[in-house]
Image (cartoon, rainbow, N blue to C red; front, top):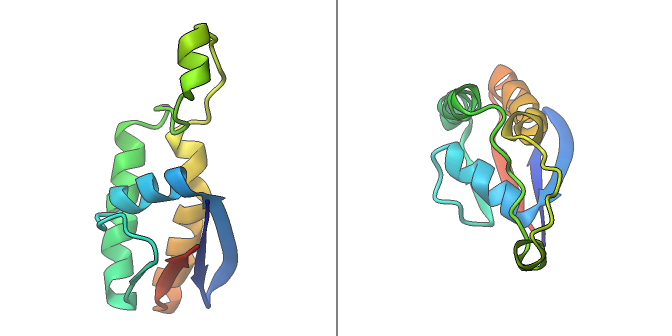
Length: 105
């Protein structure tokens, strides 16, 4: 599943569903898809996401597959800081322009 984040202030961002839901929860939202933030709620969500990233920037945000667990295979991970960057930029633009943010499949 893919999740698209949209606002009038920034290009649409598409993320893998599990990554998107994790970031949505870090913003302080329930994690439901579809969902939205009203313009007045965007700055607080942005701040919560930035705080989470600052606390654990190198935390992996890629779930380990069951095949990798069984084989003991070590995989490369993408950090929370890298995964969150596009969404932080989108939220920053939306906050600056006082625009809503929506996400959907």
